[in-house]
Length: 289
Ligand code: R5P
Image (cartoon, rainbow, N blue to C red):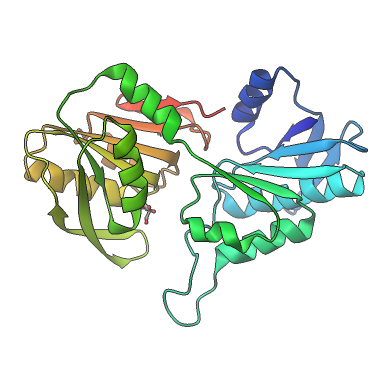
């Protein structure tokens, strides 16, 4: 077995390798002046089971292309099998035609990963599980929830908890989380979206008065969804609001929104590497290595 890291989150790859007690494989990845990417494996992979770790986070197109080129290099170097480990799967949100004449990028990305030469894919908290069926190769779907649940259990926040889904689409995820978090009750924020990266909270289903609300989502991008939901929870009498998300995409103005004081704590994993300027006092980053 050999593990190679792309450039998107080398520190997570290193943690995974350390956990397994192996060194990361040697690989040269560099850019040409015109933006093209060059990849060369610097050790033999002939007959090896190769694992490539690369979240396809921002810059999404570059990270995805880098991954395709890594896969191609492994295939041409006679790897026995190529498993692609994608801690955050970019382009997964466009998983259907919500309007006419749109593309389904989740399916396109799945096709391209397979076409490049992947034998197997491991994804974590993919935006919608239906996208798992877009691959015609085996897919393992793993979750950030166990890591976050362990952390919450170690904190003993309060007896009076309520788990909240910030939108109707996340109810299944939030329900599973609530069940594991001492069978806490569930509340749902009914959100109507007005446009891409814009959200509008309509109303709350469930009771949060006097409770500590634990909001659960797969990702925080601009933080519009989770911040407006948190404002509603406070308005409805929640004592404190925690945000728990696997993927810290954190596109502007997420940091301003999240650090504005509405959250007791924002708990995420390191599926996406967070530079220092995206960290703030209320943020806790857990390792999913
Ligand atoms: C939406 O369905 C997702 O689960 C997230 O709630 C959404 O993508 C987060 O985006 P933002 O942080 O920009 O509101």
